[in-house]
Amino acid sequence: MKCHICNGSTLTFKNKPETITYHWCRSCAYIFKSPSCYQPIEDQKSRYDLHENDPHDEGYRAYFQRFLDFVLPHVGTDVSHALDFGCGRSTLLATMLQDRGIACDAYDPIYHPSDDYTKKRYDLIVSTEVFEHLHQPKLIFAELVSRLTPGGSLAIQTQFHPNDPEQFLSWYYHKDPTHIVFFTAKTFQVLAQMHGCEMVAQNGKNMVIFKKKGELLS
Ligand SMILES: [Zn+2]
Image 1 (tube, rainbow, N blue to C red):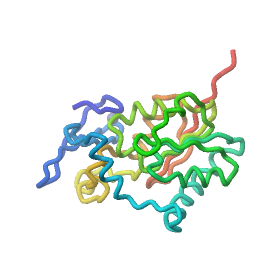
Image 2: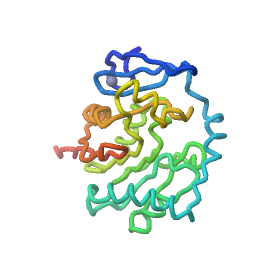
Image 3: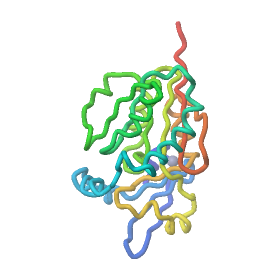
């Protein structure tokens, strides 16, 4: 099967005894489960309903604080409109941005399904623990970049995989059945180049920030 990001050739490996097939692109390091494993959104919802994301939980707040501590120094000071894409049930991250004077919309296909965001442009889009669930991450990446103002920033959090089949199979992150696609900084570098973005920072672990290149005035 060709890579769904760069169209390069993939190698396959399986986990046993579940026999899920994984496709591993040697060019961009994208790994994706066989599309036959992808679940309809109703089945995913029953699992997401179990997530206990209590906005009053200090640990949950600290988790987003670590993300913002990494992201905000890279996005500049003239950020006024943001979007939390795939926020889940809670709008805590949007609230934390609003507390910093940044108006923030929250979108989630299950819990906050208004598509108003598709009519707007944003200086900053954040998306935490979303990309590993996407059936078509390249399309969503392109969609989010198209919603950025020139010079706007896109910040993504998803665990980077070890880029080695043996280590991958003992890694916890792919064992969640709703986690179907996996990235490294290299994969995101390739996505950035395809979509007119610059990857301005990544932490080698789970966070990456892109800036949309400015549009030249004619
Ligand atoms: Zn690839």
